[in-house]
Length: 460
Image (cartoon, rainbow, N blue to C red; front, side, top):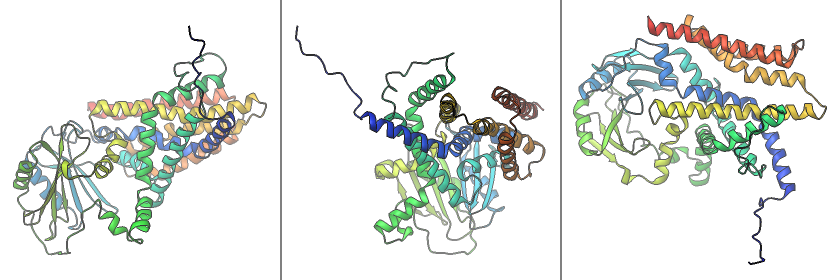
């Protein structure tokens, strides 16, 4: 028998470095904890936005198919209701998203419709779902600044995930080690580490795509400085076709049904997924047909026509660079809208795990302080008001939206958040267990009311 012994594998980072990384992990997590938790919570719910829209508006049609002539009627009807310089985006029913929807947008102008199988339109402007989406995307701040802040949150989450792995040499080996029923701090630590490592690929993907989406404006600005002396138009031209010469003369829509048939013939291996009409009703309009193959995450086939129905250009998967393909899938990958309800459900469960990781991280730090004889009861109550209070406040906004769809939901949310945090900081006459019990009962009650209100409307 050989006397040589196999070298025992060791973590390739010194103990001093591990302690430094752990310290930075704690500081970074604490600095961004509340906003990370809010973005993760709203994102988890926003995954179900298509379902929530129809829950708010139960009478809207859900088309199982949309024939080309019905698609043409829907676009023509929408073009009569919007300014001629907007963009129309018609999404057809598919395995990824149920029903057909039509969106008109430009700047702050935004209209949404559900499209029936005969091409008729029904309003799909769902007050609470829209409130939730904008809270997740930009925190109801101005779009540029809010998106930038959410993007920074994605960077902070990404950094926390990396530093968390580096700071825990045993995190892989102890992946199934749970110490339940003992010290609260050890129990929370195990939950934090296990959920963090089990769902790490999802957490990493979500943080990276969120950071890219939120910081896209900054990324474009940096690229323009590095490559084009600050000309952002040249950067956008790498991904977006330059607009045609302006021609605002009135013009009728061409034969859209015929254009769909011509586009389908040019992408025989793809299914038509959406149509985009830029500047409908003007001579400089553009009609773009998008198709997606059976094994593709997003649309990679594109055929574009001008206002007279003449073919301008086409792109297919073989024509796209890998970077362009990856960039096109960031949004779908982030929100989980590339598949059907099972994909959304998986995203929802994994999103809840990420919320638990964020919540338990701060709880561990507070419990460690208490164990060391330096408790911070006010901060414990405040963090409890954030973790349990935000779901309660979101449920209350849903109740308010049910009775008053035009209510200022962002103002209500801000007021509720301030009152919850201030009340938790000031109210010290109850134990932590009583605070936790009150929040949980409040959440159970509010969710029950939401379920009865919206579920009852489905039964009417």
